[in-house]
Image 1 (cartoon, rainbow, N blue to C red):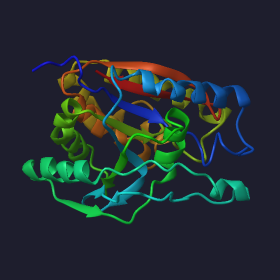
Image 2 (image 1 turned 180 degrees about the horizontal axis):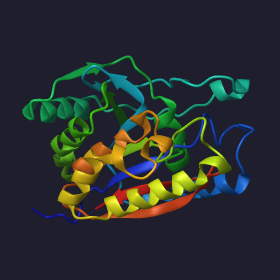
Image 3 (image 1 turned 90 degrees about the horizontal axis):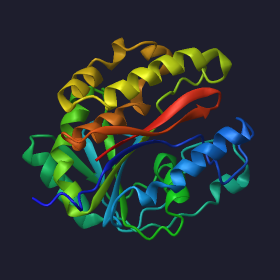
Image 4 (image 1 turned 120 degrees about the horizontal axis):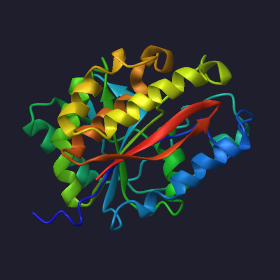
Length: 268
């Protein structure tokens, strides 16, 4: 099979709340600017324009893998305490119902239970980073939920099942944060974030079998639970890595955000 047009897979940090479209009042400007600059490079990562974007966001969990299947998803403002304009943002990307059905087909073939939701909107783990990357909102976009229980093995298997989408023009994006401890942001969390991030970079750059083994055992990584008291912001990486197959990982972004080290990881 010709792999020249195969889509990469991407795990990215989505920042905080309605940033950068609203002044969120926290964090250093230069740190936020670095993350925004990275997100603006995303359209140049695939060799061709994606047919669609499938986003696995840290902010959606369901009992089974659930596919967003609406034709015109609204925005879900799943944050609070921000200025009025935070709830007036727009990003009118169309959905992708036909490809959502293909996702269910692939998952079902792998004996993974699925459901669909035609009413759910894009949460901020999707519309905030993709509004930076694709402001024209012209690429059909849809989401896939995490599965409650947050089992790394289950999410690697979901990713493996979805790998054929990469040869069908679908860009698979995992949206989270490689550090996500709401009480740990800032100087007090920097050392832990650097240690965990170094482990994560070594992991994603490893051969696929080693990478998968390390991801399955992520909770034993240096300062793992200091960085992720709850792992929902890390689990999108498992899906992305599963879909990567044998492709090598790279770390195109590594920078302090909110005073701690965060990173993005690409495959393919």
